[in-house]
Structures are given as structure tokens and as C-alpha cells.
Length: 117
Image (cartoon, rainbow, N blue to C red; front, side):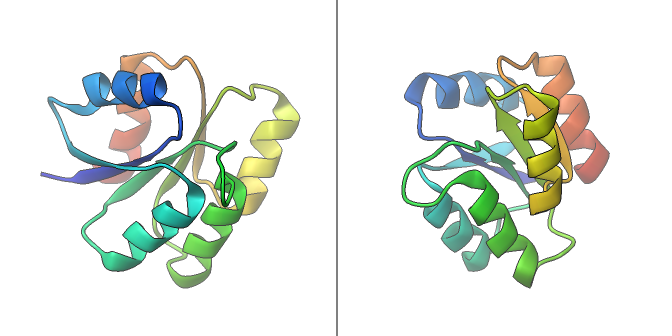
């Protein structure tokens, strides 16, 4: 089973994501961008759902760090920032897709499936 890293500092948002993912994927949590980068480096992760506003290292910086070493690694931005400028910043940082919170399970799973089949 493929493993999704949910980089999310908010407990309730993380719990919502586990309900969306639990039937189709294994999942793990990073509470900040630095943890996300370290967990991708350690291996065993197939895709990251990346919150943008997080402590220690934000999601944009974490995405840049991941993409520097692993250009083809799939990262999907998952953020409450729904403006077109936010989408553009996420794509420029290297995110492969962009989802706005709150996200429906159908939309989230469809976005993941584009990268993991």
C-alpha cells in the first residue's frame, strides 16, 4: 500500500485527512516542514500533502528542499489560502498540484491518484 505523508500542524485538519486516506493509503504525519523534509529523506513515503503555513519551515520552503534532491517526488499543496497568487507561489515552489481547504474526499483522492495511480 502506498504511503502518504500529511504535513499538517493543525490536529483537526490532520484527523480529517486520515478519514479521507484510511481506506486507500497508509499515512504518516509531519507537524512542520522540516519534519516533512526529513521524513521524505528517510524514505518509505510516496507522496506529500503539504500544508503551506506551518512552524519551523513553511510548506513552500519544505517543497523546495524536497524537490532539490528529488525533482520527480509528488507534492500536493493543501492549504486554506485559496487565492490564485497562493496557487502560483505553490507551483513556483515545486508543488505538482494545489488543493484548497476544506477539501472533499473525492477531490483529494482524485489528485493523489493522478500521481500514484
